[in-house]
Amino acid sequence: NEKDELSVLATEKMIAIINARLDGVERQVDPDANLSMERKKYKFYLDNLGQNHITTINAGISYALALSDLCYTIAAERYVAKLHGISQRAHGENHNCTVEVLTCLKRFRERRVYIKSRPNETFQALRYEESDTNNDDDDDDQQTQRRRLLVLQGPIATPRNVATEQTFQQDCANVSFAIGTPVIFQGLTVTTTLNDKIGTVKEFDTETNKYVIFFQEENVVKKALGVEEQFLHILFDLPEEEEK
View: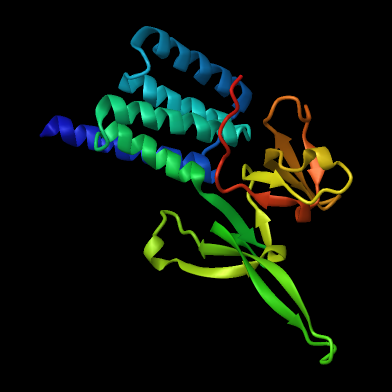
């Protein structure tokens, strides 16, 4: 009926907005002010309508997108995961609201990267794999080395068409992270206390050739930190949030 058609159209519109925001096509002029506004709006609906109301859930998505605009992507992903659980329990798996939240969650869970030789194309990183390579410089003393690879899918078109994308391996040294990518520190030998801590890519500093990482855990580092690429790994699955 007409009501269902309007609901589907509204869902499709919200999904398009979500993809545009996360792709960087649409950005708020003042992300700090926008975050403050979206937080207040979400709290208003939460207090007056309750967490199960569709208006509250949609406001929660807008709040998560505002968090993402400021590189709080880990917090945003966790927030949308909670919203999905709420919508699923309150409205059912096939409800338009639940579908909308799930679409947003899947997009947040994508880890997008670039191949350095193809900077104008975007790919989705799927997982890490390792490959054995032999050093054939000395036939009498061959050494086997472990090489870490990323499995990529793409390039990603706008709008996305997965059917046209290819899946292939790429050496990690040839891949650069997109802004907002969740990462985990591994292999640090000086500031070892940061190993296994998580953060998000805020920018790449071309002068120092380091990624600027924004920490989102309390009591770690209160400001962004420049880190060399070799000590960063994509965080595909977020750890459980610690109880406060």
